[in-house]
Length: 369
Image (cartoon, rainbow, N blue to C red; front, side, top):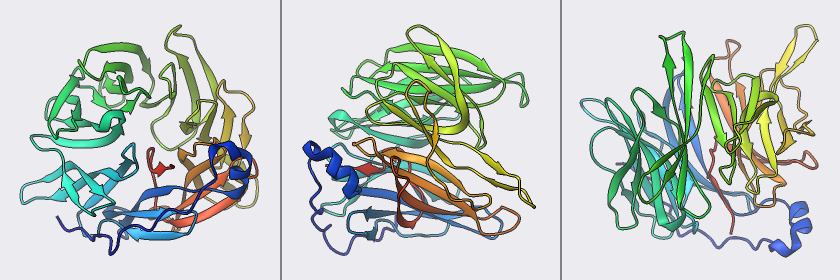
């Protein structure tokens, strides 16, 4: 594997205000470190390569972690609990096929390690408590939830009923459980779509079905931090009704229109992407960022720019519940084929944006001490 290592040890993080000064910290702006993906697209809009970089938003310093090479995809990065390592999904072309594995990057030693092996494509890492990495094993006939142990061993915890496919797993705060969604199409390509939500015992692999329902099309399930609720939203990037379900009572209800919801770490707020049509000539369409309370009330628009075909999607929340790491997407061509991504940190109380480098981030990308 070709990796461009850091030329020097990461500089000490700039001092950030402590949690006892939360109000001042919110005004001062973001801190910590962010790992993000820098994609490269061809003129046809297809992804040619992607690499990982590190940003320290308090200082503006950005450093390359992996090198951009044609056909090599590095993405889905997530921090270890102590903020010293990053687990990520790596695709390299082999003479016979394309292979996905989970790798880690140690920011102290600059060492890259492959931590998975065996059949199938191994994707969607989530680093949890106890230094365990959960991921999805995509075998030829089934999907399994798998774990890399601190000792380095790996094993399958639970396999979804075929032909269901797993989404990215989510750890409980205590590390005892994993939450994961499985889904598949019923009745052919244009048929209905079944979603299964599970809580998996992280030690035994014993499954508990939290929710089982059928939709008219594919849905993404965003779990609340405590695993008590979830929000279903359109799996494709356009706005539709979002449904919140309480897993204990099975009571559900519509909580607005949008997609890509993201719960704050304390479970009090939900960010999501909406849509807005401006009746100009020609009509202008864009997708602002919105925030609502955890019960779906008090929805409000946060981003105010009016660029045609611009979209803001939430990647990760800060600990203070005030700042959001956001992906901004525009297109570089009139045909809306070649996307360009940029990172922003948005203060949801003031709407103030901190501009970060080009690229995009995912859940687990922002580490704060």
